[in-house]
Length: 162
Image (cartoon, rainbow, N blue to C red; front, top):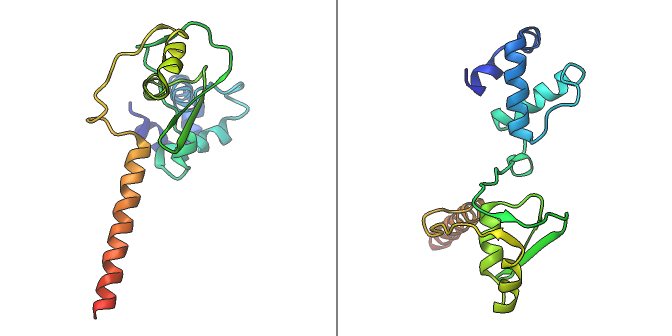
């Protein structure tokens, strides 16, 4: 059964069937990063939260949870905020919630001394990925915004020329 098939079922049917309920709890945990404290008590609100996420009516930027790949290992996670500056944008993440993309940026942006200090924080350094082939979410949003701006400028020029 897929997640789409699960949410297409009636909520009361999922609630009554133990196998569907287990699948729902696993799906909820994967989507939001935590399992409901009391799945029976909070079922209605959590069910609609999951349905809205899957159907795309929730803001995906705030609910999107990235899975961290185990290609890097931090020596000790202390709950500190790690940050690096790329161009004019400062990127920040807690050391307990690092992603592959962030760590690669963290270890490649900064002065030579900063990069060496940062590398000492890791017991296992991440594998390099081809950043040219993989676009980040931010880059896709930026590209879309630039394309919209260009088309708006072209439309304005056409109107002025008439």
